[in-house]
Structures are given as C-alpha cells and as structure tokens.
Length: 291
Image (tube, rainbow, N blue to C red; front, side, top):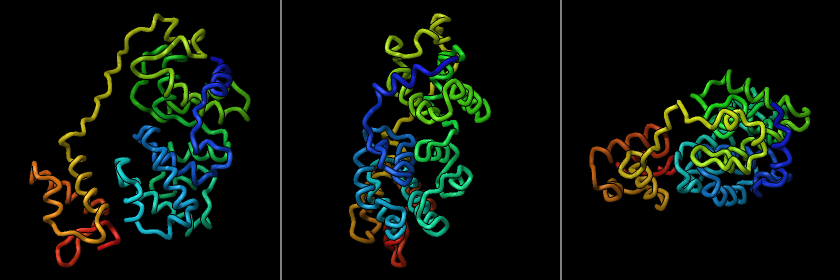
C-alpha cells in the first residue's frame, strides 16, 4: 500500500509543538517522548516548556536532585518517569559527555529508555530510517493496510514489520517524516472511537473502509479509573511533599488521605519502595534526596 498521501496531509495538518522545532535538539525530543508516555499533549506542553527552560541540557538536570525533578514533574502522573529522566541525564553526562547518542542500542542502555523511546529519538532527533510504532501508528496500519477495526494486542515483531512495509512505500529520506505523519494521523483523524474518515488522506485506499468498516473483534481497552485508587492516594501524598520545604511528619501525610488508612499505608510504602520518597531517622518523610 502506498502511504505517500500521508506526507502531504502532514505538511498541512502538523500541530505546532515545541519539540518539533528544527532547533529543539535531541535532549528536548528525548524529554518530550518520556513525558508523552500515557499523557496527552495538552498536559505535557506547559510542563515540558518549564522543564526545558530550567534544564536545557542533560548536564543541567544531572546537577539537580531527584527531588527537584519530581517537583518539576508536577501532576503529569507516573512520577517515576521524573526519577528515571534524572537518572538518564546523569548517565548521559557520565557515559556520553552530556550528549544524547543517536544509536538505538546506546539509547536503550539509558535508564528509563525503552524500545519505543529509543526508536523515536533515533528517528525524530537524528532522522534515522527506523520504524517507530505507538498505538496511533498501530491503529492506522491495522485499518488502512489490514482492514481491521483496531490494532490487535501489541507484538513487536508484527508491528515493526507492518511499519517497515509502510515506510518502504516512500523514499528513505522521507521515512522519518512519514513515521511522524502516521502518528499524527492516528492522533487527530484515525482515532479509536470516532474516526473522521472523510478527512483521511488514505480514505481511497483504506482496506477497512473497503470492507465496509466492520465492527471490531478486539475487546475495547478498559479505561483506568483514577478516583479512589492507590494512584490517587500516592499523588495526594506526593503533593504534600512537593509543597513542603524539607521533611514533614507522618501526621501531615495522614491528613492528605483520610478515607482509607490501609490504602494510605500501601501508597506510602510504594512511594518508599519506588525511591520517590525517603524516611528520616526521626520518622519524618521527604522527597528522595531531601531526607
């Protein structure tokens, strides 16, 4: 299947995102990819801007503390990403002279960098011809090329093969641009619940539409609730510590989540195990590095 029409569509429809600026640089792109994991663009952009203003290079972040990173992370969720990004910055300084490497395997050696992030940085920061597959790309390829209503469960081998086949339909120098365009198409047009097929550049060739847009056979993904969960309890406890100047007594944390003592204890223990917070010798609690 020819995916060339996506390139022209992307030229016209591409969102103006700061990490897509030609001068953004590999570090800025790496930070954005970590922040965008399970988090929408609208929430990421203001935090990313503040983060990059404060720590424009890996060396700047490496010189800060893990607690500084967690505070700056704010309410993006999954705050372990902040700690991993801090550890990643330290590794970049220690092993790569403060520069982000372009090699996928070297990127994979960094703390908190998985296969998707490594490929995304290699592709978007360095223009390498490597397939990059997220849920949006998987959905576009499932519909347009395979005629399925939605992507099946992830399979690295199958997904990378499908993406490679799509990229092979355009010249090598345009493939990084196509990877970005396929993501944008899935995010803006070929959406999971209400695809706007009339606006899609692949409308005429889409195998799913040609088959009559059949209903899916893949069970819809369950939407994770947040209210009342351990995640929410963890967030409330972290909010107290982020807003504190140093360690706080246990009583201050107890007040942050009074609805379920056992759940509060679980949340506190998990924050300690994850290394996000520490306990002082006198029994108080603080962000990691501030005890």
